[in-house]
Length: 284
Image (cartoon, rainbow, N blue to C red; front, side, top):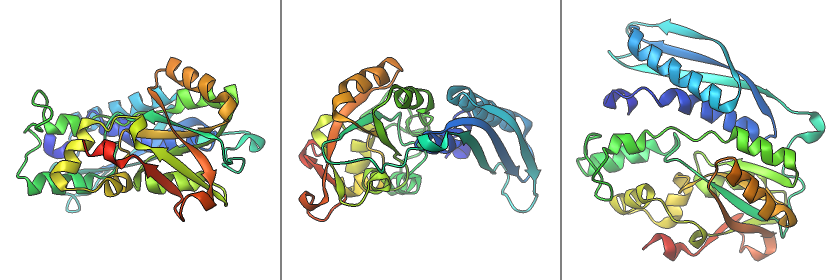
């Protein structure tokens, strides 16, 4: 999509975000990042823009961009196409690794707002747009002032600084980065046996972008929550007694924070690991 739109500013941030957000959920502080840029024939301007985005992502995450690799492979890539990969290394004291093992019924679930689609679900996005004959330069009905491509390519939010501050303050039991699989498949990764997560869809507003995609693609709320972040890019499971303090701290760090649910016993969840009540709020 970035290639088709000629917009290469955000993909470098996305690349870093997908790595460092997965590190911080372990309680780790990202230390450094390396990238890999492959193309058929190097376009210096495009590559420079992408690398500038990677550097900006590293700045936001507080880690160093210490190197990378650029490869030209004529015949493997179509003209103008390129491929990105990267990895980050972080550190956390062994006795401070966040495993979610201490999560239990009564813990509070906080949701940190996303900035958009966050690099996941784009196969479905592209299909929905194609089925409606929409180009990336067109506008969605819910936002006539901006092009669809601009909305969809909003860079992934990087949660490192805020989440590390919350971890250091105490009371964070687990973090889940909401990527592919959405709310329904990412939160279970941090839940110990015998527990489940119960969310209330009415505690945060479904962003217009996701509501619009759901309407265009005739997606049921459950399918939406299994594919997209639905406006929640990071989930924090915290001690109930610390929930209000931690929500205020995260807000002071620049996050938009919602109290979206609680941890319950698995026997009360009807066999589901994540239960979302209040689907009707997403159908409005």
